[in-house]
Figure 1 (cartoon, rainbow over the protein chains, first blue to last red):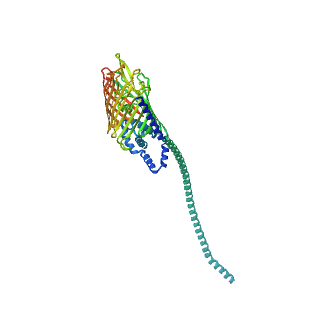
Figure 2: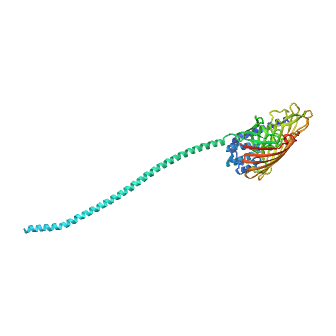
Length: 112
Length: 431
């Protein structure tokens, strides 16, 4: 169990470092991607587009997922900034993917 | 003489003849003068009229000019005000934009409650006073520091303070977040998501799902959690979420009853030490096959110990579901914690705590809500066992501000407080 724990922690922390380093250099990568051949640039644009928050999806997810635990709260309850932190918390607590959280945040911030 | 006469006559005649002519000539002149005078008068009158009209026009113009000047002043004042307002709006917009786009966000959330309990065979009392602020400190979309501190008023009037959880959460990507610190146990649904008073539809936790019951409370360690859409990305259909963790694990609490040493309970507060030296690993997997339905399976295993004794096995099993249909809300959960046998121990047997509950709620008109819950809690100690029916009526002052009343029909060992029915009232506020 001890070895297993050490391995798990090591894997998790390296995963974290990798994930963070990927995020930190995202802008540089994007710039690099833009200078590459058009096919790679198209892929990068498509990837970016797919991560774009979607208001309609967010509205659906807000209605379906938030009620899973608690009474649904109106978008006007909180400011944009408060929703941002709340959605970060709910992403982790309620088991939402990054895309789901972005979609719901888009809906809440545009409706408050 | 004749000449004189002639001449006189002639003169007279001429004079006489000239007189009318002269008279006639003088009248024409007068007429002309009169006419000229008349014309002059008319002209003067016209001029006077024109002058009066001009005076009126000048007065009107002066008035208009004054009005125009006043209007211009007002317009200038309005323009100045508008300019100031625009500057103010720009300032506010800038500050809002800065706040919106700032890298770091500080946010305070949490919940609080206060209530009243009237229990059989005991004095009725105001209690359930709890304040649980949750601090969020977020850096971009990458990191969230979150911590819940729990303040509770105790029976003796003192206040207990506890760090319910403190974690630093790092988003690795869209599907995984690394969580490190003391976290609420991800086993099941009630402990990690439903226990806050503004979320729990009844004033009490189901038996066995409170602290030191059948459900583990917290863990100190490292956790990886996230979600994976099983359908198309962005689709609101099938999803899976997960949480896996490794932590220090629980400690066993001893009690001597009737001269016999027993394991009173499993301490799962999230210890900052590991007395057995072995970690506990576990987690939960949740499936959302259709919107508004979630089914979860939980488990954990590892070792635990009584202080100064050898290790013994420790296991958790759990299952839960939640479903919303129209105005109904259904949920249920089963959890079991087991400590394995150890012949060398002062309490050598296998010890198992288990509990399950089913709850149904229905939204009535005018923001009322009816709730019913059945719970069955089994413990190695008969004094802890309890079967409970709870019925409640809630009034939603706001979605996050709830007034609750409930009655619990409790069945336990006769003579123990687990057997006493209770009436509970509670005001809960989530923020």
